[in-house]
Length: 161
Image (cartoon, rainbow, N blue to C red; front, side, top):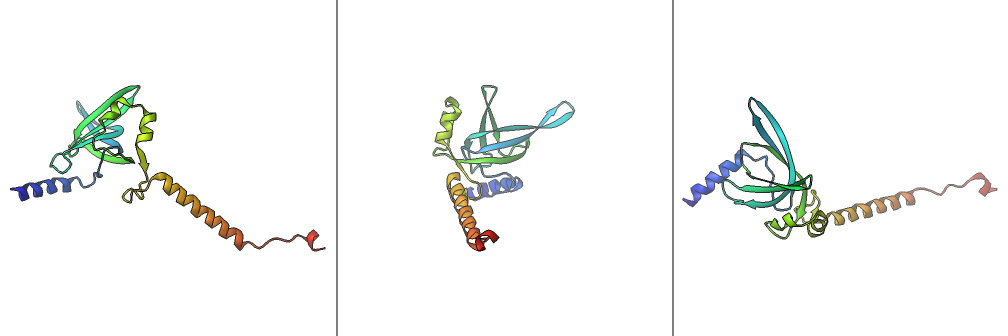
């Protein structure tokens, strides 16, 4: 029975392979299909994932929160919902908890200190943005130093007389 459930879950996830692996702390853009009468339109909801429930099940549920005009708005929806057109990962942050319900009572300034931004290129390696920026700056300085060493000093005519 367990094998059948696992196979069912993998088949469902294969249908929506375009969805990124989400974790608490990620900032995402969710494009939803909204039907209003005869019309159908796409609506954008950008916010922070504060919870992922049932991650390995056939119907994981995500909770995304944003603050709009000073009012907190949360969107709770199944990850494999047909309403979802696509999900884009905007920013990945490193959170020490799997559920970030405490975000509801904190200000943005406090959250900036608690959640550390992780670079996309090296998100799996776990490097922080500051480390990546430091490496890029060191590489640029080394390159500039190498270029200065290659340039021969210019001697003007007045110095030769």
